[in-house]
Each structure stands twice: as C-alpha cells, then as structure tokens.
Length: 476
Image (cartoon, rainbow, N blue to C red; front, side):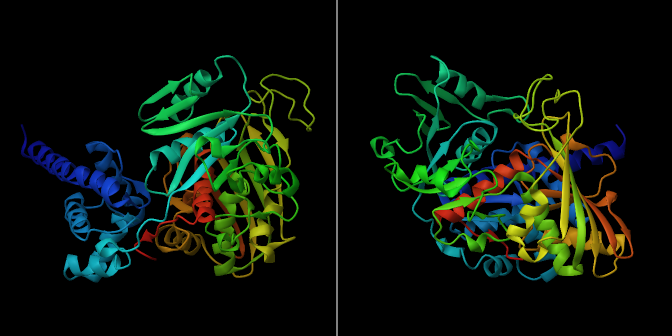
C-alpha cells in the first residue's frame, strides 16, 4: 500500500474519531439543555458519523474549505462545559469567529454565548399546537414539530381532519410514515385506532374528526390556549379563520397561505416584528417567503427601482393529473405533461412585508412537471450599479453573517439541479453562478423547496406567535 493511500486512510480515520466524539455531545446537549448544534445552518442532531463529516465538508461553500472537524470537536466539548441554556448554536460560525479572533477558546465561547452560558435564558412554557388539516404542508409541519419536540417549545397535540374512510387514521399515519418526495419518517409511528391517536417518536398526537372549525372542544383532550395552524387553505380572511377562535381551547390562528383583507402576511426574518398580539396571522406563501428576504437585502444595499419576478414552480395538488375541468385558467391541463403558465400573487404580496416596494414588481408563474422545489427569477433594475462579483459577494455574506442567514442561502456549484434542494430549511437559495449583472440591471436566481423550506418558515412564525422562540447564536 502506497504512503499516499496510508495517509488518506489515516486522515479519514481521524475524521471518524472526531465525529464519534461529537455525536454523543450533540445528543446530550439537545436532551438535557434544549440546545441544537448546527454547521452553517445544517442540524447535527441524529446524524451518523458520515453525516457529521459531510456537514463539515459542506462548510466549504462558506469558508472556501472544509471545516476542521477535530477543532470543532474541541468546540463542542467546550460548549457542553458551559452548560448553556436553550439555543440554536452554529459551531461552523463559532469556528470561523474563533479563527478570526484568536486567543483562548473557552474565553471566546463564553463571550460569544454569554446570553445562554451557565443555563441562562431558560425555555418558555411549552405551547400546545393543533394542525388543522393534514395535507402536504400539515404532514411536513408534523415531522418538523416531532423532530424538534422539547426544544422549540411548540408541543404538537392534535390534528383535525374530515374523516375520509373507515380506516382514515391508518391512511393518515401511513402518509406521515412514507413520503415520495421527502422520504421515510425518521423514527417510529404507532397507531391506536380505538383512541384515535398517533404516537410518533414519543409525541402523542390526537386525531380529531370535524367538519366545523368552530365546534371542536380541544379542552376535552387536555389542550388549552392552543395555536391552531390552518393548512387547509379553505379560509383566508378574518371572518373564516375567526371560526377557529370560537372553539374551546383555541387562542390563536396561523394560516399557511396568503391572507386576505387586514390579516398580516408575515415573512419570518423580514417583518416578524409586526406579529405582536394579533390572534390571526398569515405566513404568506412559499414564493413570497423565498423572494422577500433576498429582495429586502438587495434593496437595502443597492436600491430596487422596479423589476419582474418569474417563478418556475413545481406542480401542486390543485392541478389535474390528466386533462379535466378546472375553474382556473390552464390549470385543467395535465400537470405531469405540461408547462402551465398561470398567475401568482407573490410579487404583489412582497409589498405587504416591504411596503416601499408596492407597485414596483410584476410577476407570473410557470408550473412545471416536478413535484417539489421551485425557482424564482428576479429581473431587477437597481438604483446603484454593481457587478456580478460584488452582488454575489454581498449575497454570500448575507447567507453567512446577517440576521437573515436562516432565510437566505447561497450556493455556487455548476452541477446543482432542483432535486438537490429537497429538504432545504432555508426560505430561498441564491444560485450564484446564474447571477447576471449589466451596470444597474441584475438577474438573480433563487431556488426554494416550496414544501419543506416553507414549512420551516411557518414553524418560525409559530414559535414567535407562541412566545417560545430560542436565540440563534453566535449573533451576526
């Protein structure tokens, strides 16, 4: 065996050893301290040894090189010694900050994590959550809430649906267990048909059958002061959604679709400060969540005079599998066989989160034959001239060290395609190699998982409404 091969094996074994030291600490911090460790936004919870190593490799998109896994093993051990309170802690950003600052690691961490060191910032009282509807978004919300049970402060208690068959709960559980796009549920699911419950990784979910949002008595299931997340899309105004508040045990309502009338449309990271004490709030649409954070930072840096947004969107359940009647224009044609030109309200909806852009953006949508992951093409006339390198550098830095780092991602790979972004937790991912700039005209391409990425934004809004959010550290 050559010396080079021997050295390669030695280096890989050293990475495996470091990953094996990291794994148990990740679990203990999550269970004992409500602390979730990430690497540039990617969770390390429940990862394998190879998954830990892969997350460190992913860091090259931000730092230009792999993250030193042996150094982060030391960082993780030092974080545990600090006995931190509930938080989301990014060890990738901590490693980069420590390299830049130099000096003693323990002293650096105590400063960077001061607000949660020694158990500070205790978790708020958990808040009951009810999913009204259990479709594509509802089941992904359930997966996220079960995965983060005990850390977000959001406690999934029930799902409300209309009974579809005698074995309805079996079918619902099966759809939660297996997903053609997002894969198998990571864990165990047990159904109790007599009690109408689903036990998912220790989280007991009551399945409630009802056709009327105003008549459910949640208190009979021990649910009180609950946040109802309506993901049916059936009601979108204050009158319709207000029906939920007539039910015993319901306190607030979050809509997973654009709201109508005076309902606030919230894009987390952009205008979540407007949530306040409102009892009914909308989390806007997947496309609005994908483009608004990117538009916000570009407008703040360069100014947006006007522009056009075209979204190339995955087909959705409201389209037909084969040609058939549909009340909407063109949507009656077979979704799996056609590109379907249709309208989108996302460009106008941006103005609800960024009022000064009202009237400056137009938009259209093209539905295409893929089941998930979409792309928004932002064709913008800027007030300040720029270059590809300057604009991309700014957007990359935004994804790394800004308050919107959990909303805006950045990638510069010549080989990525839509399926590579399935499961992304960011609202949108800027494709840097596709950026076009000509003086003050810029074209920016933004990928987004219109199912899972959007669901992550919904959970962020829900945590804010419930008053149970935890800090993301280190601060930018």
